[in-house]
Image (cartoon, rainbow, N blue to C red):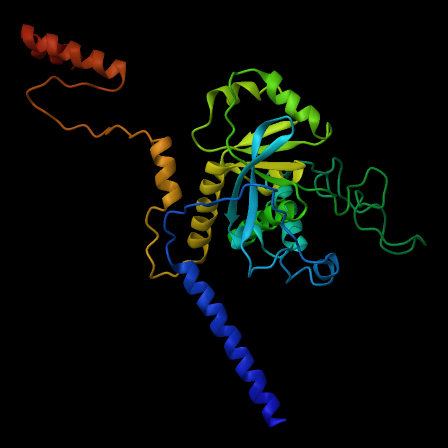
Length: 358
């Protein structure tokens, strides 16, 4: 018995050390992420996931793929000709993003939170205190042979108020940022495990015509909806060509959400967008798990977005008084009063104007 207690204590200590070590890793500010692209001509490699029995039986702890092997995914062409989509290249994905346990409970919590985030119920009913009519006692307390009644507008009587009726309320409730981040990783891992996540070389097209993209979609399942994650600097031809296709949706890496992944059947990610998405999720993980003593600073994803979309600098609205320059007022009526005052001052009529006012 003593040995068993010591064993349990040592195992709990090891788990605490492992958890502390993972938190320490998350507290380290991530450096600039670089993709690992490999040349692998010939047949297209296939990812082999774990047996379905293990994933169903231990869905809360088992990741879809083995973490001891690299998560190597083929790079495909966006507009393939003659069915030759494989480019002869592969890319290694991050296990912490695309190979996490498929926690359905986390995704369910996120979807419920997202659906109720902007919900406001405005319906209201009248109670016995707000319904029209007097609230006098209908009849005497005793002597009538009836049940006692204290209010004429009670919910049980005709023209009475509503008991426990609807009231205006806000359905929003908080959800931890770590849960939201983990839900996004879970749906990305699920798409990869189902074979519905593809890495494409680029989103560029030769001309801004919808015809080429529409032909590619006809070869696939006509009912499937596709989400394309493109880099921050999007190709102009592709931006114009895909706007008229209803079942094709696109977004930037920082705009990717759980609902966008769930509402689309397939997810296409370009190589540059994959690098930016991985960097974005690593920076989010650092921001959510960092220790207090670790400075947040500007992350790599924020610096990259700042280069693409620079934040406009706000003009300094502070006015410094200069006696050598005429005053400038914000409102026109004050400016008119000031100009009138200066004109009277130049003509020497300011004293007469004061006497007339008095």
